[in-house]
Amino acid sequence: MSLNVKLEFQPMDVEAIERLSPYFGLRPNKTCDSVFLDNYLWKDYYRVKYAVCDEKAVLWLIQDEEGLGSAMPACRQEDLEYYFEVLVQYFNEKLNLPLRIYLADEEAVEHLRLRQKTEQFHVTEQEDLKDYLYDGERLRTLSGKKLRKKKNHLNYFLREYEGRYEYQRIVCQDRGEVWRFLYRWREARGEETEKHLDYEVQGIHDILKNCSSFHVHMGGVYVDGRLEAFTLGSYNAYEDMAVIHIEKANPEIRGLYQFINQQFLLNEFPAVRLVNREDDLGLEGLRKAKMSYDPIGFARKYKVEQNVYR
Image (cartoon, rainbow, N blue to C red; front, side, top):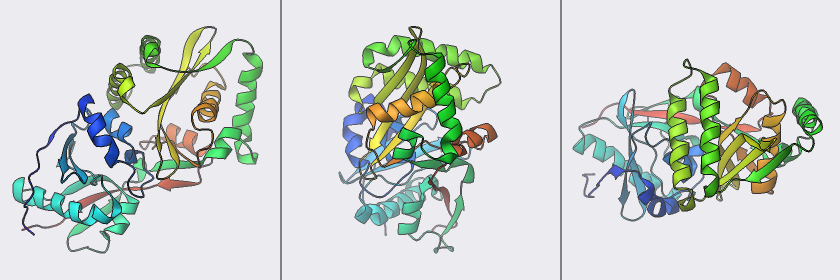
């Protein structure tokens, strides 16, 4: 196959929302990358560029510490094999590089049989970047023995802060309060925290500035009239799955994380089957926190590296 399609890659910006959103949620994919918002949130961190191909697929260029790479095409399942090959040819013929895909979802890896094509591709699971999947109803009710501690924390919050708290849906006009909350939250983390947090906060600011353009769900908890917790999520209709991109709360208020976690689902995703709470980045504390909610499975991700090319 010789590349006979013209690809014009351009940076992702707010103008791309309307054009790109229809290409997400078209095939099986339980990772957080299956929704547009997660890709937009990290566009600056990965210096994301996109190209719409044949009005059937979106192809990507991303930059990380290993250099130029890509992500799986956003398209229908029946078109995935063709546009994956287009991507291979673009890297080989136009960029003179072997293809490298970061964060490939397991469903795509299996559909393309990449682990069987050992002469062409090397596939490695990115263990620290797998997303945690939960049963939606269990997170809404915190039922069962394994979630008893979570419910105890929640009950403590409800009891100790009775009459002093309020859950509210966050709207665009609330962005100033959210920015002030994020500033306090980031300052409390100190200088030694991971640099990706600055990009995360920057991405949240960008979303809030343009939130009327997104299909985004946002919620907050006010304690004594001040915003003390904020969360942001989106919906994958194909998987009937809520993706929780952001959840931040004042850690000094016991039970607040459990409260906003539950209330966000009850108010924004009251019947969703599956909840994706993203990865743990290989951080032990975050891993323990995510495991403590008793996940029902994981959305595994892989690095795909082309071995040789002509």
